[in-house]
Amino acid sequence: MAAISFCSLTFSSIKINPTNLRNNFGINKFPAKLVIRAQQVKTELPTKCNKALAAAAAICVVLSSQSSMAGEMVEEFSKYYGTAASAANYGGYGGNASKKDSAEYTYDVPSGWKERLVSKVEKGTNGTDSEFYNPKRKAEKEYLTFLAGFRTLAPMDSVLNNLSLSDVNLQDIISSANSVKSTERRGANGQVYYDFEIDSPMAHSLISVTCAKNKLYAHFVNAPAQDWTKDEAMLKHIHESFSTVGMTDSA
Image (cartoon, rainbow, N blue to C red; front, side, top):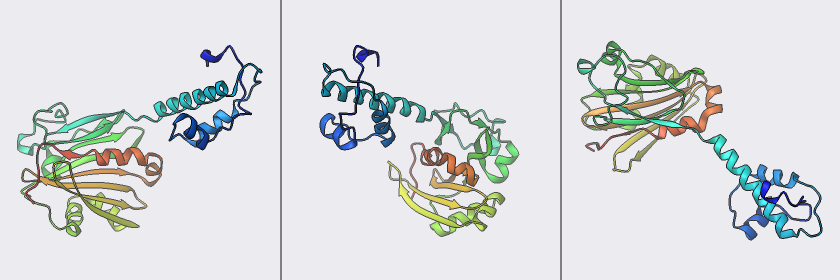
């Protein structure tokens, strides 16, 4: 607060609350804790310093604190570009993160997450194309599988069961689930996506499924229950970030 160091201020005579700040200074949204913080800044107010100056200082406290908190809440992500190459054309382990020009799908990866290298055998057996995990909590992860030969999505109630046929972990999550939510949405280009949210004691799972270029793509975000509680906003972000590139389904 160097800009107002010439005057020690008190806010005891200024009504610092959301209504006052909104009506007088045009601030519409800010955390309640910041208002409390401003209310706690109480020093002596010399007679030459008027209420307007005190109120302005209160705004500085609110805005500077809000800016600081916003910076702390920012989660950094990188964009992953996946090629969904067949096992026969797969060039070894990993290595497709920079192939932006040939990408068939993208999703966001949180800063600090590590890529698990997918083998050619694994790609050929269950269709896993890419996977990233949180090194601090390794069960917290996102991955994508694809299957060729699908022109359109099947009815929603059958898609999830079909996905679980090649994923034993998904079978266990579904069988122990407390609830399974499913929705249909369309992307910016009109492409149809099925979204599933599974709440199970084993894990919380977010799944997005779509068809494009004669392939079925399924993007998974999984986290144990305790990690879901901590990272729900971040996990939902990476779930919602998944999309195919320059393609629409045939529906």
